[in-house]
Amino acid sequence: MVIVTADANDFVSLLSRVHPRLIILPNTNCEYCKTNFKIAISFLREMGEPMDLMLNHVLTINSNGVVTYKEIPLRGTLETD
Image 1: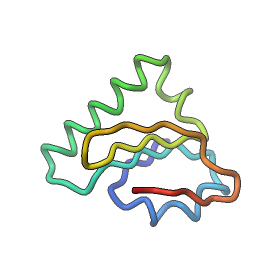
Image 2 (image 1 turned 120 degrees about the vertical axis):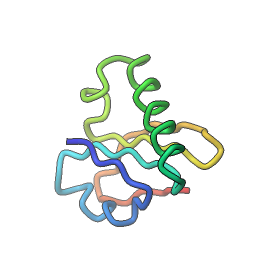
Image 3 (image 1 turned 180 degrees about the vertical axis):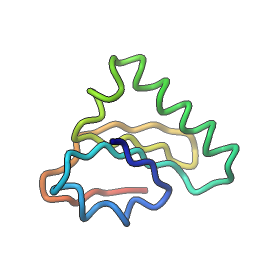
Image 4 (image 1 turned 30 degrees about the horizontal axis):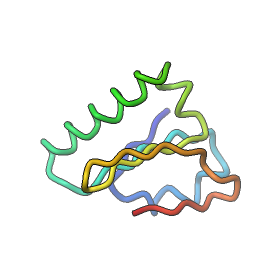
């Protein structure tokens, strides 16, 4: 399972209790959301198998379109933009 959200704070407390895969998109209209999701998947596909890469990782796209990919901390805390 992959969680895609524009409000990561709702899910951060769950991160240490599940096998998380979290994609955080900027809070925008539907068209930009689709575009950003496609960017996220393309970014992952360039690195390998998206579902494998996302296990215990978070991918964030900020409002400027900058993609970050990092491991989720063990304690369920996550700094987001």
